[in-house]
Length: 288
Image (tube, rainbow, N blue to C red; front, side, top):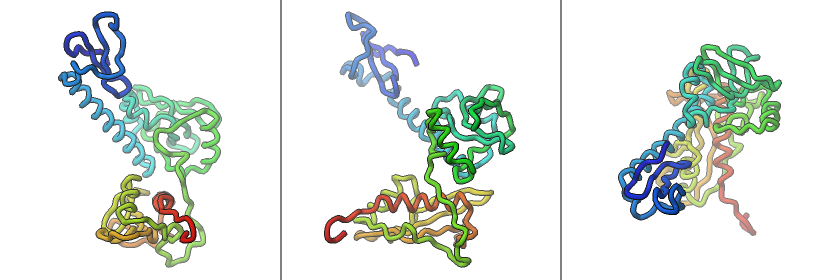
């Protein structure tokens, strides 16, 4: 974006997301100023740029959230769609360097570019740049990646940084020896907080929903929606609070036996419970 006139002797522009001014007259002509001069702070162009900066921030957040939802759900994404949004820096920030998978297990690698023709350029685990042009690709949840440790090591060698947490996302694999009728997990129960409000605030800050007495997250997997829930206490309780058990249910509210919970739903539910447990109040001294 270029510089815009903003009153006599000044121009303004968005520079790294911030409204910046520069002088157009005198010895300081062309020099960016550290702060906005009083003469331009209320100028209409400054107001418009501020509004644009706010919109760009929201747009960037929305793009990352959308890509994250595609990844968590391992949804098929049209290759043509990725090509259309790629020129937008906000979309690139969420998509670049994510592991993508084409129509076969051999078509996998880190996304580096997308062309106008709908072709994706990825770096495969052997370090080779390959081109993919299937109708759709998936952005696999890390619990579904069989060579996850190798991908992490390779990404570190290449210095890749993902805008959406994928290969370095904390994952949990469902144990094979679950009891047949078990419906809840208590691994992260009993995490104490000074107040129920503090526990609920941590849940919402982490991006989870608080509904009634539960912190929840929904996971779309294999065409179905599963909701993971952790008890956090009655909504109007003002005293100390602690996390309860973790369980999963279908959209109709039916609690799922643990053996029927899918691998992604299991991992994401455990991730939520672990994150709530990590924020607990740690007592010190003789009462610890």
